[in-house]
Structure formats: C-alpha cells, structure tokens
Length: 281
Ligand code: SAM
Image (tube, rainbow, N blue to C red; front, side):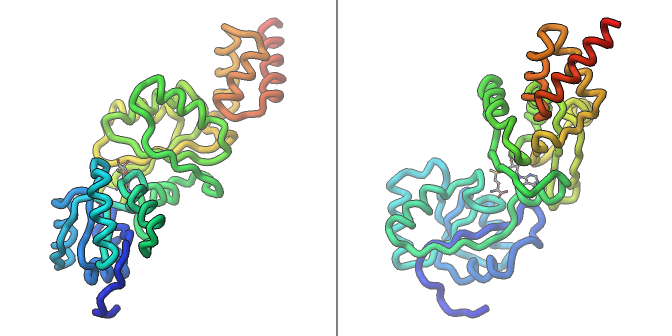
C-alpha cells in the first residue's frame, strides 16, 4: 500500500455483507486514498468509514438519481478518484451503478472494479447445490402472476437458480416454487457471515412448513437446484404422476411432471403407464 494519490476515475468497491472482517486490504486502500465516495445511503457508508477510521466526502448515488446527478458525478471523475460502494456487498449486483458504469465506459472514464463479498456467491458456495452453472436472477417479482411467469420461464434452465429474497416474502415464494417446481431441491441461506448464519435445504413444501412454524428474520438468498437434481424421490414422482393423472391422460401428466421436475418426459410417460396398469389390476 502507498499514500500516493489515486489516478482519477471510478473505483467500484465491494464491502462486507455483515461481517466487517470481510473488507479486503485493497478496498481499505482505495477508500483511504480516494477523493470521494458515491454511496446509496450516506448513513450506512459513514458507519463503515468510521469503522475504518476514515472521513471522506460522501455523495449520494442510488436508483433515484437523475441523469443530471449522474453527469455531475461523471464530470467529477475526470479530475478526481471516486469510489462507488453500495450499502453492502458488490455494487451493481441488485444494487445501483449499472448506468453509471455504462456511461463512464462510453465517455472514456477509467474504471477499476475491486472484487469482494456478494451474498449470491457466498450462498452458492455454502449450499452444496451444483455450481458448475448458476444463474443469478435478482429478486423475483412481487405480484403472484409475474412471479409464476418468471418461475415458469426459468424452470428448464440447466443451472442452479439464485434469487435474493426478503424474510417476509420467503414462505409465499416457497409456496409459489412448490406449485411451479414441486420436486426441486431448494436451499435457503440466511444471515450470511453474521452471528445467526444458517443454510437449510429441502423440498419447497418442507421448507415452507419449517419457515411457517419458525418465521425467519434477516436477509435471505434462495436457491433452486437445476432440473434433474430434484429432492423428490421416486415416491414423490409417483405421487406427482398419480395426482396429475386424476385430471389428465398419462401423456399430459408426464408432460406436466417433466416441466415441474426436469425429469425425462418419455421415462415419466413409461412410469405413468405402469402406474395406470397397476391401478387397474
Ligand atoms: N449487492 C449485494 C450483494 O452483492 O450481495 C446485494 C444487495 S441486494 C439490495 C440485498 C439482498 O441481498 C438482500 O435482500 C438479501 O436477499 C441479500 N443479502 C445481502 N446480505 C445478505 C446476507 N448477509 N445474508 C443473506 N442474504 C443477504
């Protein structure tokens, strides 16, 4: 580390998501040497800077910032070094900054991004779900229909799905996943890097039951295993097929269960026919 002034430009700085010990040496260095810090909530960032023994001009930048605010900030970056932080974790990841970075790039302002904590990555590594491919999908929509449509859109993607979620909405979301993807393995990671950190896995219905009787507190990342990695065992699959066959023909039942679980439709159809024959004998 040096005390040299920083070159002008934009520095994207990840900050801890709970445990202050997770700040990187490089983040401390840039926050120490920058001319100003652009942040979502000046009170939150002032607290972090106080913890580091720093005092810097704080410029508010959030989703409500206007084009004019952005232009003013970009103009400042031509002659000064500006660190961009969010309240916690990596800026831009379900946090403000995308437009600012895009415009900085378009107008030739130097940009540096410092890696650091992000709840999505901490949750993914903790969950034990397949991580060779994952898709971060931010927050699910609030409205029932939009949420169901998003889940249907993502259902067949061969990757672990990662969402940010709130404690108040968790059970409702698990119920919606239970309807759209009943057999899938789910992981709920809560209060990451904090005192009450936990990660629970199970089917959507088992987790919904747990969190109904133990209402969750704090911050949450919810993950859905890829199709074919279901928590549903063969008995669950049979139950899903039998339930579907009460309304529909075996071919349609197999198609529905294939959509929900990601299992092979032909294999499900064969099993549906076996179950039908067993039921008739
Ligand atoms: N940019 C941040 C990041 O990189 O993780 C995320 C910001 S987003 C507005 C906030 C959401 O991230 C929370 O609602 C929660 O879903 C998730 N989150 C943040 N900190 C968390 C933590 N310590 N444990 C679990 N989830 C967390």
